Image (cartoon, rainbow, N blue to C red):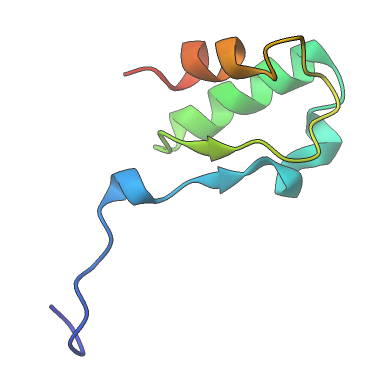
Length: 68
């Protein structure tokens, strides 16, 4: 505990995909971006302003990339 606050667990941190929206305009770019996000340790994302989503809102691609 530092300054009276507990640190957040890693599972509470996520990438907002709006910040990488320029790289998610195609299905391939979306998948590659998710792989890179997973490679640096994130296990969750917030879907926002993603250009390449299929009928499930990109959920299947997110599950495949971030599953551990």
